[in-house]
Length: 270
Image (cartoon, rainbow, N blue to C red; front, side, top):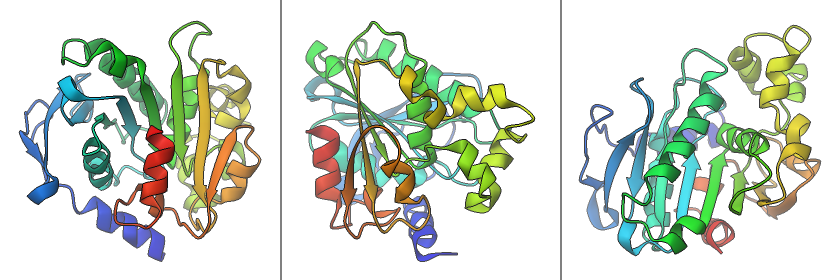
């Protein structure tokens, strides 16, 4: 296991077991950084839920965050809880999305789409102001960055403005399969090679669909140039605004304890 992979596992282990998908959980985390929160269910499967962090009534913005894990079932949202708590402590509402990680495509993209739709529909009922609902940031890390980019490419041209902030995103599923990157994680997720099911890849692949992302979506990728898991070169050739963090690795962009996190937070929320 690489140092970066080990750090992500360490982050994952900081999340508490919150019980069943319909359970309210009062305070997420422990100690001074605990933030009031609740759980929202958007589907019938146990993994189809969202953890909501922050005070809805006082939030200045809404952040929807999709965790990564290179499409592998073993990685759940636990490793993204520290990021959610840290962002919420700055005065925004954070909706951290879980999704079905077993069964391959199209579960992940279908679930992310359903979760975002459900969150946006519920925000008024949660007491989120119109200003905070309109100040919408959608982000995701690694495979989560891939999923939010793919989600955006299926949006209609008309609608509210959205700031899309993928962190160290997987952006080219075809190259991932061709290069057997991530120990074949993308091929395992997709189930078949591109030549066997091109339509599935053309539904999911950000690089193939980038021209379909509507102009109302402001895309700005954030990627460390020392990332040893998702090569920054993928972001460099992806046609979107990009900020490179000199010396940052794959885990640094989601770790509130990393020296890069203040810049990541500013780029997400600024």
